Image 1 (cartoon, helix red, strand yellow):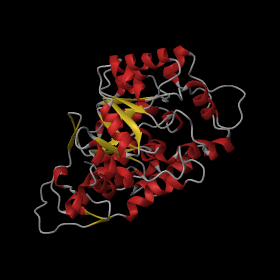
Image 2 (cartoon, one colour; image 1 turned 120 degrees about the horizontal axis):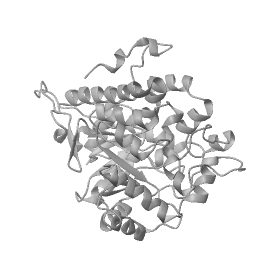
Image 3 (cartoon, rainbow, N blue to C red; image 1 turned 90 degrees about the horizontal axis):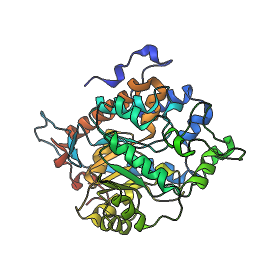
Image 4 (spheres, helix red, strand yellow; image 1 turned 60 degrees about the horizontal axis):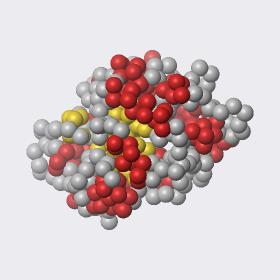
Length: 375
């Protein structure tokens, strides 16, 4: 694995980033202000957005010593798929605001890093084009539209393109108030749309709206009446495994498994939906307990360091998903930037494993986390 810090310096106005926070600094300087604030922003006062990060920083690692860590294996298995390390690419919208190649660049970077990309319904690139560009496995994140025909079309196209799982987002059928987007009157730049819904006349934001165009789009298009019955409806439409994303409670996790989910993603939508919701790492152990080994549990929100990945795995996560850092990498240097972000996390994770005395992911156990959250 190459050293992500050794990116060609001519790609940057300053020294090449040496951590994910510096990638954000580079991206901020390259993105339109409205695009950066859309990617970076949270709901209302941003309390949950900050807590997703702060909660990781409060956790301490109690490392083991005098263990032979000269040989280490960072890989793990996710729904039968071996990945190079327990980090996946979370679904995020509108990658072409970050770089011209958009989701194709992300898919190539994820494959080169040996992991899975979860592609968003709100992508700027056709499902088929992303599948053709991909060098690794793909999952598809799904919103359920009021028009079930449009939803079924997305499912069929994802299946035909070789996607290996569906990830149903359940915490955003009603949109959170993202004040930066309201202030900016956020809309997609000319030439960009929710392209995979074009055949159903659902590719563009509504005209003549004030505030966030995306919020208006969601209010018009997505179905706020969803219940657990709709999860069963979705499962009946596909042979692909269906995971449920947006879980922060153990009882909801148990219901997801009861209704046939193949896994759950502990997520508060990156702090963009209900402000003052808890940090995802804080609720992860309760969700893991409720699932009781019946399905894998993933977590997103706030992951910026390899030590964060160690903490999440120690508290029961099968893998973490990262969203915003991938966008910062895309904005910094397209596919190479996104790959550098993943390789940087992989290198930090490998180092953290060694320093914790763990030789494999299976040796990352709850007693490494010195906290009331430890299992």
